[in-house]
Image (tube, rainbow, N blue to C red; front, side):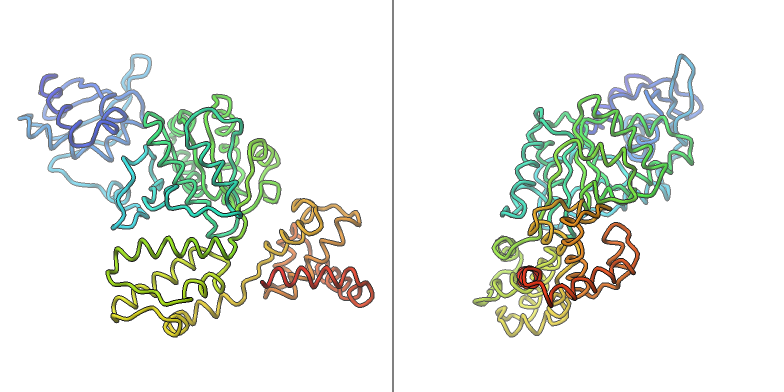
Length: 471
């Protein structure tokens, strides 16, 4: 094997893996020597050697064989300060995928098979990090509950300098946090294809961290996460209470901010409400733009359903949705957009299989289980937000330790409503209120029960809040 053969293989690889992947992973490789059927290559870092070995070794071997090189095995070496250091395990011919490579290849991709990706996939590192082709800005329905989050995400996705870093998106399940993060990644790839984007969940970040510790690859871990242009971490609340992971995340966060690299993070609560998160991390997360995705209103849910029907009509020719069905679904399924979409998919599939129109009768019969569950739609988090807005106080104050009367009374009202409007137990409610003991919740509920009998203002507030929550 010679440098000329490697040059031919590089041209073939550029065509088979694409320019983007070629520049990132293949171009840094340098042919070194060929001896006893083993081709030795130099790579700039251990991480690149491991990655190429796992993902492109079989392609390299195949192209080497096609070029006439009698190669049994390829090896990647890292040369640091003039000394070669082995970077990855050997790869033998015939071409065989190891269990580890197969596991990476089998990582779940959320993209629906019938939806075409909006462009080349952004450079997203394994494990995880798969982007859903359905989650683009074009498919995100905007309404009052999410318009600020959408505008902020659009601004970051332009790829230019922004006045806030990080962008922190938070809200309940199924409100669009992950959709917006995927949309940002797709748009950044279109506007700035040269950017190195890493999207992953906080769980995957912890997995990579633990794996790096176990395999003594911390320098490569740090190099990967601190050399990106855009870091996107979903469900950051997962690392709360995990001290070592929090410590590494803190240092990674600081390193990227110092380099003016963009960070986008999502969570199920505002940073100040994550009780097990270190204060220094909560402080960093709050130094940018923190945006709440509120629960969807009726108009937004109806708009989402109408958009989905347009998509499903292409998959199910002849699909007919009866009058009032979408309005009924938007009214009855109000807490989770994913449940709403799942209900519509079930109806469309049944109508297609049976060759029938989606009527109100079919809807009530087919979705009886979903409708039954959705009747209990009020959550403790929604109660806390409503009470905070009603009394014009911060949610963090409502949940926090402050005992002044202007905060303590609304907190007791929220406790009372949580006990009467949800099926949560007293200990569960206590955990939602900053980890308070169940006896504290019991005292708050009892106090409001007494006040509503003799204080007309408290009684009026309770009735107004109850109606708003059950609407």
